[in-house]
Length: 158
Image (cartoon, rainbow, N blue to C red):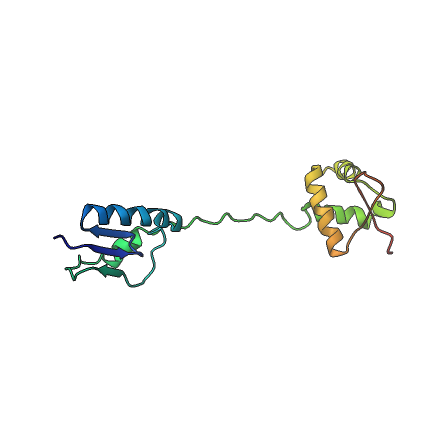
């Protein structure tokens, strides 16, 4: 009679199953869905292995720490966020328009894009929309909606 043996080393991603054919196939049928779902072995950690044996058996030597660290997934480098020089961002340029009294009348994002263009600054509707929303949230611009049209931005607080 053959000895049924299971050795699971989660941090290293090692599963050893020995024994009768029915035992091995049955256990694999139960373990494979769990192994795949958990991403077994993809995140090595320092921890103990689990050894469940029907009878004591000699254990294979554990992998060295250097082998485990080589299996670790590489971290992706973060992309540096490039900030424009002071005074050259879309919000700061909209602030220049505000300081010149541009927002004494209600202005649409398209009006703002045109006004920026007359000053030689190129910004698209998406940039202006994001900048004006942020300025509204900070309380540096006011806005209103007239019907189903776009937001109208203004400043009437002195």
